[in-house]
Structure formats: structure tokens, C-alpha cells
Length: 364
Image (cartoon, rainbow, N blue to C red):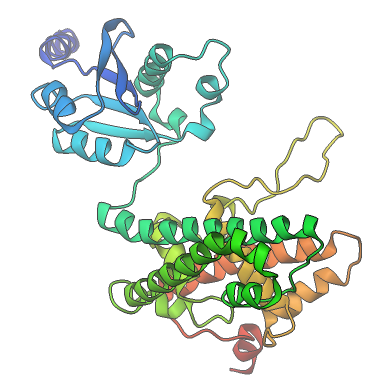
């Protein structure tokens, strides 16, 4: 009798408990599609709404708490923050991991929203949820991204000038980007200089703006993000690389082990094993491509002529000595992966960088 009464109480409690619905939203630049399913997987509602703060407030502010899944994208940062302020559970899905959506043969916004809702209802881990950085950190990161746009624009202009003068029988000498415009005005004849002069002015203006961005980045590294000082102890890692590293990862506690950062940034080799076949493949190139490029540039300095001696440099040189036409490339990537792990360790501990850590440890 007691067991029966307990089951009766549980069934009554289940009937009176509020039902939790799940929502999937496919964010668009102007309009977003949404789909609502109940606990049994039945579709309750679907439609679209404007991708604006007011539209999301009007649609979700007064509703009961729900689990809402959205894809990571341009608008996912502010949308997820708004949904959490309204009391909902917001899940930002990693689009790279949801092949059933990104590689679907019948892909459309309506079906994408429904798939997000059904995946979130069954198991949120299927979505591989990501954690966004704060708005303040995003604004600081935008400074670095704006600088990168100017650098790429200047590179395109420099290459364009070099290409325009070659058909006329002129070849510009190698020089730094800062002195490129001055060298062009010295070496080019008047008729060609009159054609490329507007491009040279744009190159000079871009260089001045890049210098201003560099100063702002140094001010952020020395002021707001002082923890980057520990990262800049490594030769080849300057304010730009250190600040990009901190702002991209956002939270140093998100990784239980420092070695996981290498996989997160795409330095882990891809694998396609089947039966006896297990070929050697390149790296996954997942994660932030710009930070990966900066780490590769730092690895070039570590292994270059001006890199000071260290255990990391010697380790990379041993990989180069193994031979093969791709030995240098493999060494650069391996050193970049080691750098990503070492930077995270210094970020967590804020310790002093020791070039020969194992030797110092044994001596101690």
C-alpha cells in the first residue's frame, strides 16, 4: 500500500509540474526562423521574427523559461545574452560539429531551426555548446580584427603596385612596407608614378592607422589585460600575440589541462582510421585561424636566426634534422603547438619563463 501511494504522489507531481519546451532558432541577418517543440517532441509553434533586440524581447521576455538553441554566428553573442536575461537556458551550438545541418541535402532555415530544437531536447551535448566571451572582451578583440583588415588591405595595395609596373619593364626592389612608398617615388618614372600615386597614398595612410592600432593594443596589454605580461616573456611573443591569445580563449579555466589548447586551436593532426589503414594527415585547423597564424609567426622567430637558445628551439631543430621536404613545416607547426600550451601555462601560473626549465629543475 505504501508503494502504491508513493507512485500516486509521483504521478500527481508529474502532472502538476510545468512542462519545459525547447526552442531552436536559426539566426539570420534580418529575419530569424524559430521552432518550438514540447517534451514529447511534438511541434508546438514555428515562425520567424526580426533579428533585433526589440523583436526578441517582445517574443521571449514574457514566456516561461525554456531551453533555446542557436547557432554560433555574428548575432549569437547578443542574442544569447538577451535570452539569459529573460530567464531562458541559452545554448550556442558549434556549427562545425553539426554536420546534419551544415551538410544537409535539403538545407533551409525552417528545417535548421527544427533540427536545433530536437537536438537540444534530446541531449544538449550533441550541439557541442560553446561559451561566448564578454561584450567588453569582444570590443577589445575587434581592435585586433580591425588592425588585421588594414594589414590585409595594405598588402593587397603593395602587391598591386608591384604587379602594375612589371608589364612596363620595371621591377621594384625588396624593402619594408613602411619604406615602400618612398622607394616607389624614387625608382619609378613619372608616367608610372602618376598612375600608382593614389595607391601609394593609401598605403601610407593604412600604415599610419596600423601604428595607432598598435599603440592601443599595447595600452590594453599594459593596462586592462596585465596578465599578458607573463606571456610576453617568451621571445617572439609580443603584445599583439599575447593579447589575441587571452581575448580568443577568454577564460583560462575553461581547459583542465594546458595541452588541450593545442587541439582547440587546430594543431592536432586529423585522423581517418579504417581497418588497417591509418594515414598521416595534416592538422585539423579548427578554432581561430588568426591566432593560429600569429603562433606560427612566433614559431618562425623561435626557430629563426635571431631566436635565442632555449629548450623549445632545440626541440624544434631536432624535428628539422629528421629530414624530408616537409621537415621544416612540421617543426614550425609543432613549435607553434608547444607555444600554445606554454602560453596557457604561463597565463594560469603567472610564473617566470625559464628557457631551460627541465635543466633548472634537475639542478634544483
